[in-house]
Image (cartoon, rainbow, N blue to C red):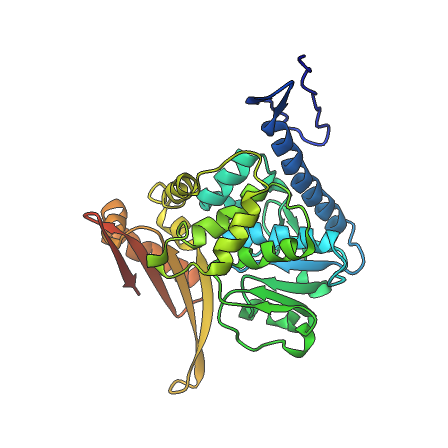
Length: 352
């Protein structure tokens, strides 16, 4: 007996597509692709609702904000953490919305994130941004409660909102800030990826993770595909990935996924020098007692060796672009951290 496949029409998605691989199971057929599309649609619908809340200036909005570097972990994890708060009453978070901490127009500079969201059918245009720009929905954190994700210290430009912080979920060194005001939600543990901490929340609540392959991506990426030699992976990362894997619509090779994401992420030589400085940038202000002032320092991470970078842009080109960039950012110093391969050997260099 053959049962016809059900045809789903996703009225909520402008990008409906059907490229299903049918899998035979005794007397009926089913398709993993349809289930996958349903899961992606859940994320898209959630992001659209968040935009509506922000635009309508809904009362009591809580911004789940990633760090200013805005890597895969920071962007994806903040989406899933906000989604968790929306569907769980454990922490009683009101009107949670995820937000990126950089201009939305800079998302294409993060090739791995941008390409993976497109591949999964996630509409990046619905990402909310905390930085005013020509694209996306802007949210003012001065009027919102804040949950810091993938960092536990506000950058100097956002310190005026420090009293708004009500929670922290992070895997970095604990700066011991906002301790009293985050006593109800303060999860800071050393794991390979902050997304591991988010996935654990779902697991502990026995909550279904929509499109679990997306949440697993930063865990695979941050732990370098669970490679012990990199000294980033922890038992918690492995355990929660194995749990997420049970929800995949089809078997995924984590090694192949890591290779694809890394290839996208490391494809930076097609960008300009300034775009490379922007794509993974963080600002720090260091106390210099001798000068009796703070030294404003910008740090940019570039996933290639310095030798490749200089060959692509020339020393003069790099110098001129850096000079313009730190003047535009009103910095007193800029550091570029390179990590890539030279003649097949992994190397790290710092230029300042």
